[in-house]
Image (cartoon, rainbow, N blue to C red):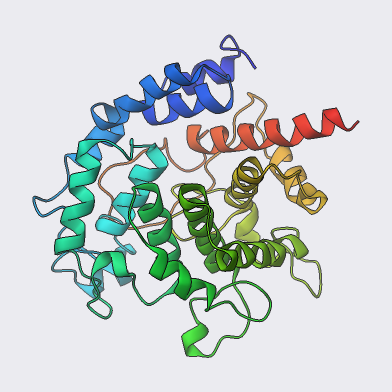
Length: 327
């Protein structure tokens, strides 16, 4: 891929949070160049805009999972709000905010001192009660340099017999869910990237991956039919929701960290991803989650999405590079 590619040019004509990832993942730019672009996330564009929404006590919207003063009627009528601390931190991680900058260090300290989960009242960096939320908390904490080993230990002990996770385990569920599993896997991967992981966390990641791979990332184990048609349509931001583009991007990141080769069972999802490419070389945003946000970062449903296109292109580049070597 070259910068003269019209899709690459379109991706680069965007926010620093997208540009630095294009430079690193699609153009193989020298590290000093993409790191310089990444540093702009703190001071320009969406990253700076989201940081400007932060409360003085380090939180966003005055709450850990829900905005302060939240009225449940809002969720029923307009959808879940996405402005509180947990979703804002995850968004900054996706943007690639430099985890070593002074702003991050101060934020981590303030959240540790002032943020408490609405469900249970635990201190933020001690984790919540649900596996989905804790998986994302591990991912954010590990990325931003927090010791979240106690949450990791808890998650490794909450696996179900089929190898994955389900937030409804506490209500009696004995089958893992795609969404819960990908949230936990992303957290364990970020923890492993930051610390090397533990034998327990690496084994948990292996069994969670196997849960998804046995199902080709989207199928029912018994019938082979899609477990949920929405898994085949792309949304952004994903928040806690699952789709095959998110799962494929996880497996790419996992393989790059461990040096493993792509698993052939990813092939069906790769084919689905490839066939969704538009004639102009871009990928569409199929749907979005309703609910309050700080600001929009996509062009709208049905329009080409830079975020989804970036994700799809780097997945296919990784997959095709391996295929060409072994052709």
